[in-house]
Length: 90
Image (cartoon, rainbow, N blue to C red; front, top):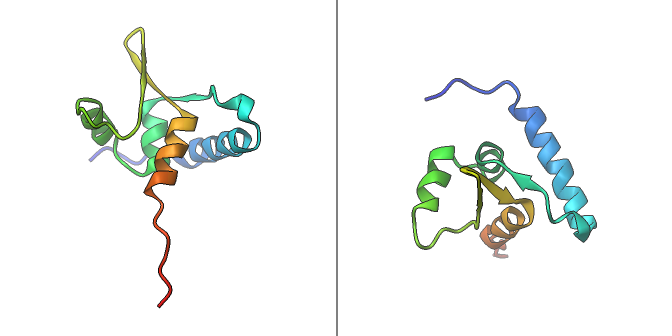
């Protein structure tokens, strides 16, 4: 298991800030995240995202540019929204 990343809280705060901007301002749908930040945001490992990209039914669309992989923040937020489960009242 890799060593904990000391910059993770700051990166997550920056991602959350971008997500807030995207949700309130649809013009900002062009924000792109790398695999590391996407994994942190969705709570999965980078290797899980790498594995998902090899599958036909990849749950988060991605963009490959010049050998690097990026995820649109709008797609990541859409994935998280689709994972939401409403609580049931007893």
